[in-house]
Image (cartoon, rainbow, N blue to C red):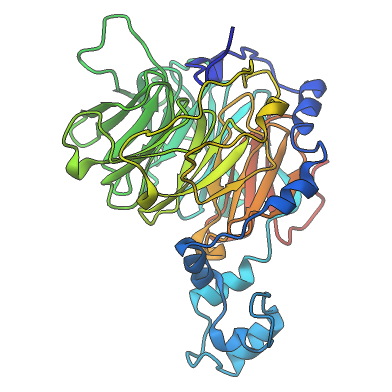
Length: 477
């Protein structure tokens, strides 16, 4: 029997262990995935990204030309902080101050690698780690029904302790509204719940201390008794809509003002593990599926139901997560083929014009290592701009992100990993610039503070920890 790329709802449920995950043999097996002598080989294979995004990134994170010319012959080398400060005092740029790119050039070299320091420790797996848009709040979601919201500005004090309603298997995703007044959470159910987090009460027990309104994503034409789970849910930038990806191969859009489902797209041929809006306009939606395809949906020209604006091919296995660069053009995706890929939607196809063919190996990512013979395989029609390898994507829907625009100019990408580490890559060179080691099990999610060099990771070992630069005090063992 051969396993396909689709694992259906078993992505999160099939590996059914409700206890806290600390098995050392699984952790060790995960570490072997990328440390089998390939570090030097990967470095040799790195391609410097020669694309528009390279120039955009350099403009966002490079010093003023007058400052960069201080060191002749070393235009690609970082200008030291001392020389940057001297240049500002000498008004080399003619502005009398640092530009945002100058700030990013300095801040982006101070990676959040020190620590970690313990934020919280639970007796169930942590699945979600998310900062609010302004970084004042942090959300962590756990398998044991708890969702905790921490006030970052008040010493990471728990501002809201939410006990999820009608939870199935785990909290698969959460999303904060742009005004930070509401939070939605999803599980393996068609009902997404919304909570008012602006209320005074710290404890939020569903329909006991507070109401957790249920938003029904099941369509009117669904068969009676049929149920599906939601893997991914996101607020639109204006807070008026939610987009969700589900185990019934569909994308859903929910109109919060009308309090009803406004759109259902039978989008893929397998689970839709991840969805997000491309930019602030809300017109474009990105989706990623176990069918190994990323798709782009444009609601302005949605002529025929279910037809995407374009398809991005390149992954050999299912896609676990997508993060948008926010410019309406670029995105990254994490795949079960153990890679992150960078995309430009202007290179997409009108449909899936070719497939990598049927694989000749038996593999299930939930409990098996990635086959050795599959590591060197390449998609015959790979449309991605660049590929990043080193982390491992096994056992659950591992997430990846661009680093913040404000402090790094989105110069890096980073990812959790099933080998219990966090990996940070240089966007342009593909080089692995940092590996954060502390956790004893899978790191499903991690998130970089939008303004400061702070990164928080959550793991199946129950720990939520923060990494900082420079950091102070004694780190957790």
